[in-house]
Image (cartoon, rainbow, N blue to C red; front, side):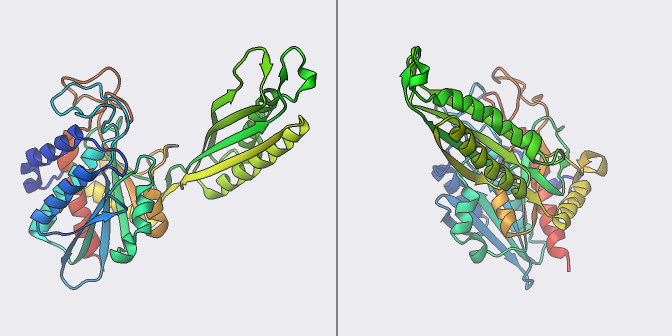
Length: 397
């Protein structure tokens, strides 16, 4: 493992930033304190700062030399609406708000790299530090893009790094192609005719119809798409009626769809609407489908991923880099940036929770868990990766 000595010496400072952010979590588009902390740190290192991009996003720009090459590095800043069970000193001070996904660590690692790069500037080109709000369901990446991110701060490629519990600390990973799924939601409203439960033939039962629709929707995954194309269709909410002796007028089904490709997503949405309409008609009901596409799949481009993996091997050693990380059905709005620019979304191991030596809550140290905490032992490794990525990327012809 080749951590830059000066960054290793800055470990306490980087950790203090991380723990300060962890203690003061802010939800999507509320990251005012975090954004200001980031902006002030960047300005103190003579990095050009733009505030308020995508509402609460921060962009730092560092230039050196005459090259027009530019690289974008992204870290997310928002927390989750989750109560924290940990009791260590840096636990959340805000009720029902918690950095349960490690965005505090992502921000601190990128700041550690920014400080080093600003001091040494051993590159020829431009580094764009992207501190993004609202990754957790708010589409902050899209908001920054719509606010002119890549027009105002053009980059050739863009990179992100996410901590991964279960992957040993000190290891990295990435994969070419789809690494995280699209995130989509649907709601189906079925309208029938209410009646007494003892006289069902006087009504049109939306509950029975909803059950048939729910069963039919699973045929899309098992009988319409190719078996080798991954997809998940989950009905997660069903609502109908209030009284046990009355057939209600309406019933509602809702849930999520996850896919690794837009083509499969198109197929699922089309077949869903066909099945819902036809099944409702067969049972004399009316039905409407609302299908909302939230985040597209996160798809890494081959050259940028190969390059990032090479840097990971240089930093951690070849034996500690997984070049074909399993994709996950989780979603990530860095996907919007990868639609605009080539790049790579990589992973840094967060360990299995062994770093929580005291004061941690009940449960595993997994993402979106009330007992989660970022592993400070990997902060300097992550900062070193960012620095080496910049130096090698901007050194290429």
